[in-house]
Length: 218
Ligand SMILES: Cc1cc2nc3c(=O)[nH]c(=O)nc-3n(C[C@H](O)[C@H](O)[C@H](O)COP(=O)(O)O)c2cc1C
Image 1 (cartoon, rainbow, N blue to C red):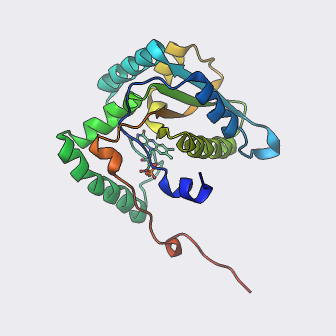
Image 2 (spheres, rainbow, N blue to C red):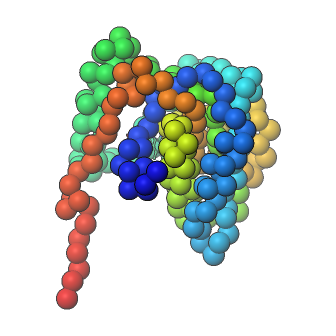
């Protein structure tokens, strides 16, 4: 598929079919993912791929932790967000609302519990970073996340980044025996999209480019 088409078509998928993804396909996606650039080609990413009963166990543990701690999906800002950003988030949620209404679900509950369950995807991938790296290397993980999402789309698979997992990192590390010196930076739900579920028809919008760019020209 054409890269431009892939970039335009990709969206976060929030309902998956339970069918397992062949291991060979997951490997192909990850082989494409590691073509991502990284500082000094350090390739700092580590992937933990969780499938089958282990993935179900992970979801159960996360949902339990969510019910105990009630930390919801959020941008995790360290200061109050300038209004522009808050408005974008609110607008996105407002545009999602009719799809959730059609499904007869509560949006917050669907997003928070859904994120803990990787939205029913058969594969959960955790992108980890050794804690000897500075925060700047999160950039490399972010680029890998983008490559992963686009590569998966090429295989007609859906993805949803799951930032919510960072709120429950202790539980995840404990369950999956992740060493203390590895940080789980971001999770990804990977699987076959269930196109019959209305929320998967939702396509988020972007502001005009002028809002993001300042040209400095001679
Ligand atoms: C770092 C990061 C964390 C995210 N965490 C979550 C999450 O925990 N749950 C969720 O449903 N979506 C999550 N998303 C998906 C975003 O909500 C989504 O990318 C955004 O609304 C734009 O929509 P699109 O991906 O369909 O273009 C996350 C995305 C990113 C990049």
